[in-house]
Length: 379
Image (cartoon, rainbow, N blue to C red; front, top):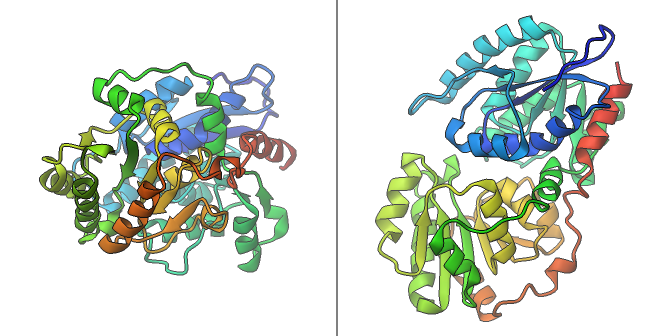
């Protein structure tokens, strides 16, 4: 990212390591790279998910200035904290940013925020104020986001609900700004990119008139039996409806997910198990889907733009806006409930039930603009 020469220019460091972080930082990166940008900026990646972020960075034209290269097989949360803290401290010492922008609730974001706090840089928390009642669920994200908000100089709340949560917890209103979610900004950027499926099976399913269900399942708290129950539900639905329905399930590379999914669903003829799908084809699958089953918060936000019913396979969600708007239902990892709610949607046929007319409660595509205006006007 091109730097500015003025010593008076505020210096902003973006941090990303996972696939969702790259997506949600993309619009900020692009706007900071505009010729008339008033902020000097750098991008640091931790490479926590290097293979998954590489195509996204290429898609959005993102080039890292710093690479912490922390990825190693089967690493623990504590090892991530240790590596990010040590290696990011060197970045802070080199660049000396005025502001460090971290996104969401990952261990990458929490570790970078603490290191920045210790170095005296201001922290801007992109997607602040999301909460569940249980600090252990989702784990470790709920703890991470609370820690980041505690030490942030600015909390960029994606919705009025998240703003209200921060104010209820006693944070100064001057530190909180409702921006919308940058994931919607990224959708606006990506929707302008021409696309066709390279994968012939995805192309076939997308072109088919049959009911299509898109599934994502990967959360850590589901490793202890939850993934098995989700797969059991999918298997039941797939066999009940047969060739009149297609499932697409991009399989997360984590062995706790991959081995279970392939052993339980690998022989089902109407369940297509793919490798992780790049961002652009995944967006187009969400557009095409008649039903979405997910345990991903990011997918819950993105899918709310496209109008297909969403079943959230988590016990609790910090993204209640789509549920309150009637766009999503919370079903947990209860096999029977997933089957029952899915079958209701399938029985309704290929229709969005007017949901496409409901505005996305997560934003209007101008979140990055609001965030950068705030930073530009606050010392």
